[in-house]
Structure formats: structure tokens, C-alpha cells
Amino acid sequence: MAIGSPVEFLRQVRQEVGKVTWPTRKETSVTTAMVFVMVIVAALFFFLVDIGLGHLVRFVLGIGG
Image (tube, rainbow, N blue to C red; front, side):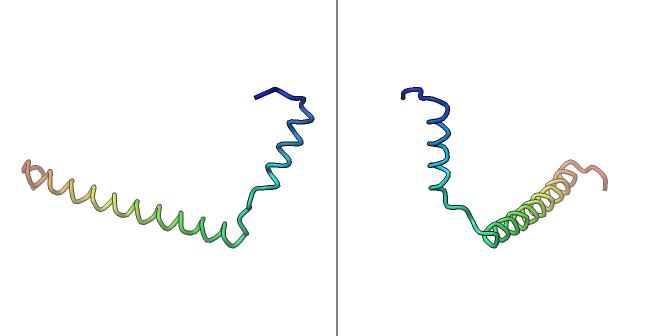
């Protein structure tokens, strides 16, 4: 890969950016909402697993009645 001039590099960058398919505002909003929902679901799952394992360990070890 040959090193060209900065002007040539910028021209190629501009050309490549033109090929990108950018998401619409609606697609971005829906994707962001789904990420937040999945983060909440995962957090609740791990919270419940942590509580369950805590109770199991206390039961097995006989700590805390």
C-alpha cells in the first residue's frame, strides 16, 4: 500500500464515507430502546441469580438462620 498525499487520502476518505449506509433516526431510536431494555432484563436476571445463590450458600453453610 503506497503512501499518497494527504489530499489524496482525504479524497479517498470522503469517497468511502459516501458509501456508508447510515441508519435513519427511527432505526437508531428503536435500536437504542432495545439496548436499554436488554440491559434492564440482563440486570434483573443477574440480580435474581445473585439473590438466589446468596440464599443457597447461606442455607448450605447454615449462616443467618
